Image (cartoon, rainbow, N blue to C red; front, side, top):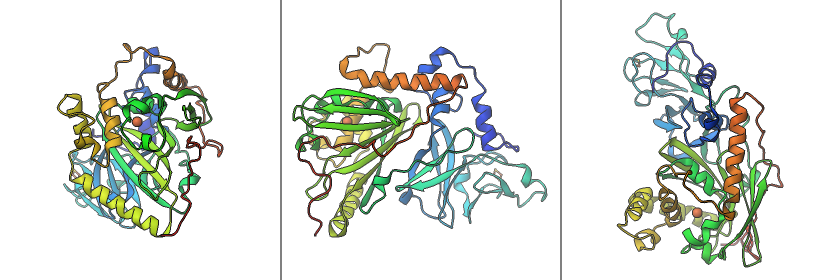
Length: 413
Ligand code: FES
Ligand SMILES: [Fe+2]
């Protein structure tokens, strides 16, 4: 949607959006809708969100992106920095991504108006020289970290972008994104649902690595979100972490013979209310020739996936009964694990009907998650202080398999 031209700054626009509506009690538990006027949308915008994979945006390239029901222009300046401004030119509304990147600015294709990364118009080739400084669109703080482009769309001054030390050492960063055709909150709930693994992933590397058997689910609110403790019949205690608002952080099982267990952090990001993306960063504890071979496998995986049907569409075919999740068309793909989750979550419908669900003991962390979200959203609606989430070093996931080693024992080729 086009935003008004005028001098409105991004900050003022966000504040204006946030005060447009009066919220009712029902809004405190409406986690699903994330448009700019919604309570969940305002809450989500208080956190940095990943929007794109760094290496997929070249210097001088501009692209349209849609996040939380709003359209924006993402571009990389000629100096290499990524920037995000509003989607449309305020002159007569053409989209900016079709224009040209000039230095760190972007020029509209239609009549050449040019905007800097803050959204300030800096040139109107055919207009009076004193007009351009009166026109400003939204420009949003943008940073690159762990191979992703993060943006702050929220009210007020952007907080500092959270950092994750164990992803910064020597090793391989394996960065991925997938699209899931259902509301993002279903995937957030899945962050705290270890009881799905023995069923949804009954044919998978989870089993190969010993993550089998029904877990005894426990957990509690942490300084970051929710610590999830699942004790499996093998005696191991696997700890994974949900970080507010949508993050999942766990130890991910080896997917080949030489790269070992990986660190995984993933963010669920609404595109609109009907579907979302998940950005995933794996940190693999390998160097040297092993790292080179891993990178080669990353390239091969990407090439293989590009030639296959979209995973989320394949999941819809499973849901319609046209094929089985146990067919080779699913299990033979490099992204079969994600498809298993697509099938389970898209199978809940675009919006899971929470009025009809029958929750059991193993849903205790889903219930806790909703309570935390509702508490924070109510505080936001009432203008009260929100919990300041952070991730101290002791919040660290465990593998939870007796004898499993995080770092492969030999480093030689
Ligand atoms: S519509 Fe962009 S310069 Fe005219
Ligand atoms: Fe899963």
